[in-house]
Length: 438
Image (cartoon, rainbow, N blue to C red; front, side):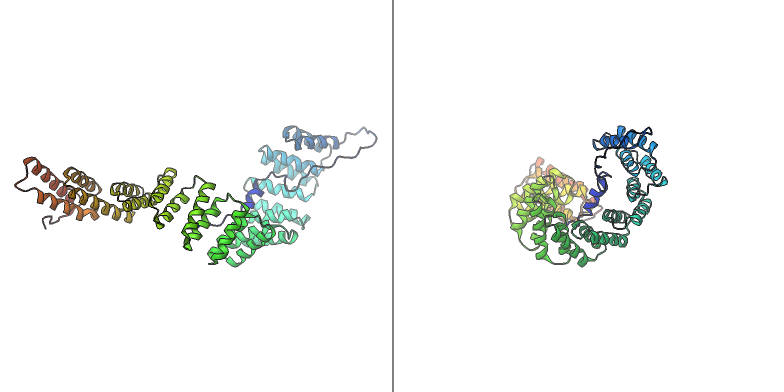
C-alpha cells in the first residue's frame, strides 16, 4: 500500500518559526535626537533593548522595553518586541497581555494584532487566533503572510473552504510563491478533488522545480488518478531534487513493482534503505521482490534484516516461513509460522502452512525411521491443538501401528505404543473422536 501524501509540511515551518521571523526586522539606527532636553526620552531605552533582543538576551531586553513603555506608553514597536521576548522565554500569557495593552494604549499597528494571534496560536486558542488575524487584515488587507497563516489556522480547525480562500488570496498577492499552491494541493487532496489537487501541485513544481515535497505529493496524486507514467516521472523529479528522499524511493519502488519492473523495484528499495537504513518496510518489500525473482537467499536475508528492526511483524515471519519452506528447511519454516501466529493468532495462512510444514517433517522422519523425531514432532503438534494437523497425526498413528509388530523388540514396541498413545491424547485434547485405524 502506498504512503499517503505528505501533509502540509510548510505549515510546520510557519508554526514553529520564531514569532518574529515573519514580520520583524532590525530597525535602522536613529538619527541624533538634537539638543539635550530635560525630559527622559524612550528612544535610547528602546534601542538598547533592541540590541539585547537581536543578541537573544531576552531578560535585559524585557527590562529595556518596559522602561521605554513607561516613558512612552503608545510605542507600538516596544510592545511587539516585548511580546516576542515573552514568547521566547515561555511566558505566552504575558505576551498576550502585552499585545492587548499595546492595543489599549492606541498603538493600532496591525502587527500587534498579528502577533497577538500568534500568541493565541501557541496556546491552541484557534478561534481567538482567527479573530486577531482578521482584525490585522482589517487594518492591512494586503498583508500576504496574514492570509497564509490564516489558512494554517483554518487547516487546524478543519475549515477547508475558508482555508482555500485564504491561500488563494495569498497567491494573488504573491503569485510567484509555490507554498500556497502546495498547501492548496494538500487541501484539495483531503477533499477528494484530485484534478484540482494535481493542478496546484503542478503549479508549485513549475514555480519551484526543486520543491521535492510538491513533486512527491504530485506523484501520489497521479497514482490515485491512474496516471502511472506521470507518477513515475514525478517521483523521479522528487528524488532529483532530494536524492536522499527515502519515501520517494519507497513509493517509486512500489510503482515500478506494480508495472512489472522487478529489477527496477529492487534498485529503488535499495536506494530507500540506503536513505533510511532503519526502514523495515523497505527490507520486507525487498524480500517479496527477491522472492518473485527467484533469488531465494537474498529474499531470506532481506526478511532477517527486516526482523532485526521490527521483530514483531507477523507478515515478515510468515513470508520468511514460506522462503524457508521453498528452500526445503521445514523446521525453520515451522519456527517462523509459529512466530507469526504468536503475534497474530488469527493468521489463517500461517496456520495452514505450518500444518503443511509439520506434515513434511513427520513424513521425512517416518521415511528415515526416526522414531524419536516423530514422537517429538507429534508432541509439538499436540501442543498446538490445530485441527489442520489431524491428517498428519493420523498418519503418525498408523505408521506406529504398522511398526509395532510381534517381531519388534519390547523396547521398540513400548516406543511405538507410547507414540500411538500420544496421538490419541492429542486428539482428545482437540475434542476429536477419530477412527485412527482406518
